[in-house]
Image: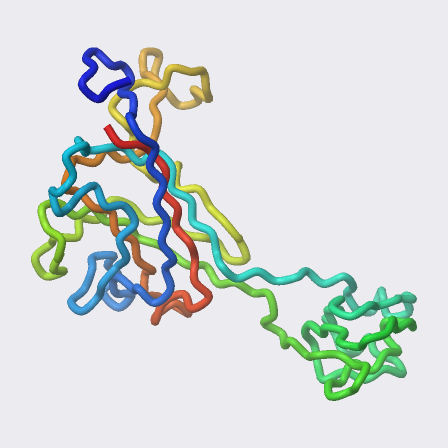
Length: 259
């Protein structure tokens, strides 16, 4: 349907919108000041550009109704765990499989560098009992010690901002206007931002969970209306282990449509 159509309820989009950006060291805010406001010298990444240069003839604005954050780092889960209960279990390992040692006290005749994850690197299949294998590194048919922290992904918070009327926003001028933030919990690969996005102005034309709504309160979609000239920026909140950003990186994906 054309963007010139009238009496659209809800509003319909003319063209689909999908944008994505990889965020790594684009930090925002200050954990010392406990603020998500963009500080001087910081530069979050552009996620959506709704014609900030005012150069497109067929852009009347749009809507973003879905934002997904997905970590770029992934870790293979351990196939076996060595502890006091499993020490005598028989195993057969092929190259690439992982053994997680939770206590060195579970070793009997075997050798290990300490607790942590060990990846088997041998070219041939190895068989034996979990507590009797040689896990020390440097062997031609041995194990690679991955350490205690292998597979641990810290919680990381992403902040989203609206910028209007400029292609060169300046933090000190308040150009970056905070809309919401979303935390990717520790050891969680991907999250949906629908729960923290603002409600759109029109009711949902569908049934849904009405828990907590008043007797006449309508269900509403979540999303962000964008005027022509608006931009959405995103950055990593500089706190804890992410003080310099989230080094492994995460892709932020926005979907919606143009009017």
